[in-house]
Amino acid sequence: MEAAKVLAGSPVATQSALLGDLTDKVALITGGASGLGLAAAKLFIANGAQVVIADYSPKVLDVAKEIGATGVRANVAKEEDVQAAVKLAVDTYGKLDICVASAGIGGDNNPVATETLENWNKVNGVDFTGVMITDKWAIKQMLKQGTGGGSHRSEERRVGKECRS
Image (cartoon, rainbow, N blue to C red):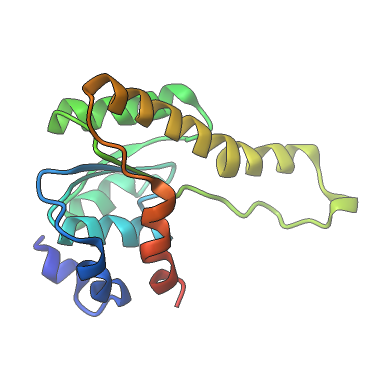
């Protein structure tokens, strides 16, 4: 699907000019099947990037097809899943330039006094450890190829404000 059609009516459409031309860039976006990750994927595609979305959701492949990305089902709390997502980006597009680590879960939102260790570990495994694992394998690939280096944090700041409105 054409990027213009994907972004039609989207609040992130106005962010394209801020992001700039991403032609010949390859981005890996975790959490790309919904929310901020999906918005970032649409924006990157609209600006010319080739995008791989990695998400735990069973709908990731359908979402990827719909927006013109490549999709892979992945749990970012598992190194082997993140390694496979990075490998898919490189095998499909020849390199990796940008990583947006936006996978996240809310968990049960329990008060600390009633929080379970199981829920705590699940949330932190995705929201914190998953970011480290994603950054680790993306950075390793970028160092190996001698190029890349897009920061997930800077890209999220660019699109996050619009995505939450």
